Length: 139
Image (cartoon, rainbow, N blue to C red; front, side, top):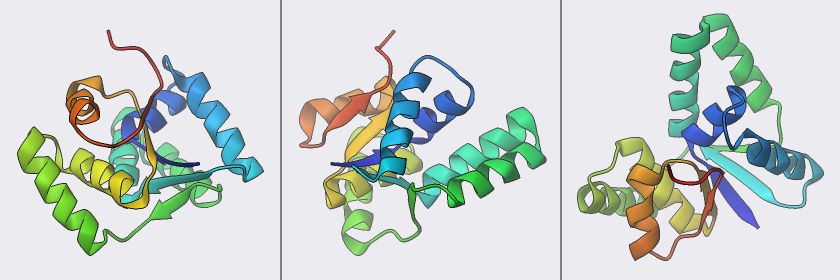
């Protein structure tokens, strides 16, 4: 199975928030090679600037080094199809640009989105043929 991480899921893992255990289990699976795990460069940037803001530049740089050496595949390119879909999602759901790229990428590669962002992404789940793995319940 293929999964794509939302920035909020990675941040939950790094900050040991609710749902961190589910992300940890997925990262172990990634290391075992049983499934494929992706994150877009947009989500990497979102986590990176959050880490600078919350924990400082040195911590953020260490996060990047660890991510680059992990078995999580960083998608640096947004395909033509994903650009078109991201534009559709951005305008149809009034979501952030980062989330529109995440959802479009998941749709184009047939991956399940790993997230905790119920506010922006629950409407997509209800209307689109995209699979979601929620790391924590909606509050």
